[in-house]
Amino acid sequence: MPLMLRTPWTVAARPVTDPVAAALLREYMTDVADRYYRLHEGRDATPGEVDRALREMPSDDLAPPDGVLLVACHDGDVAGCAGLRRKDGRESRTGELKRVFLRPGKRGLGGGAALLAAVESAAGRLGVVRIVLDTRRDLVEARALYARHGYRDVPAFSEGPYAEVWMAKDLA
Image (cartoon, rainbow, N blue to C red):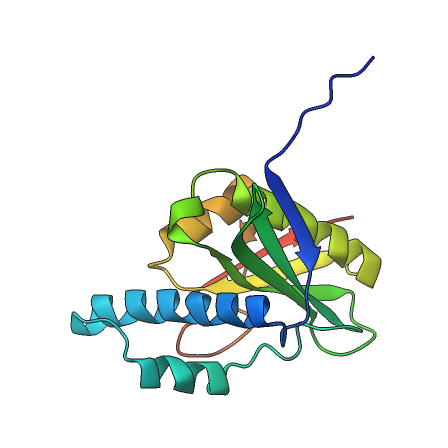
């Protein structure tokens, strides 16, 4: 009989408008904005700056039929999120990984791996065979997570003030 291991992680899709999902997306944006402003200006982001970032970089496209927002729970507690959206239109077989976030108290417990596995499973259901992402150099923990799970550096495929590192993983 095979050994069945219980994982404390569960991951399920939620609409971006769901209050839990919306709160996680705000926490994500606050976290990355705080890191940016600490690095460049020695301070945390203001609530107004976080609001502006949420407006300028909405997550509306992390929804069916061409995307998904996944929410992770650890032992029943909401712990983080990750999103996937089809890149370059309905017929594209490339997806873009977005909004990967774990609450600070849940980091280092395997949640990143659980979220990436769920994203890759969702990608298969969308017909996506390649996942790309862009990130910042200072988000070293995220970059290390992606590299551990088979994402490799690729040439730049996007522009923007926060795109400094580009990675991809072929799923097929």
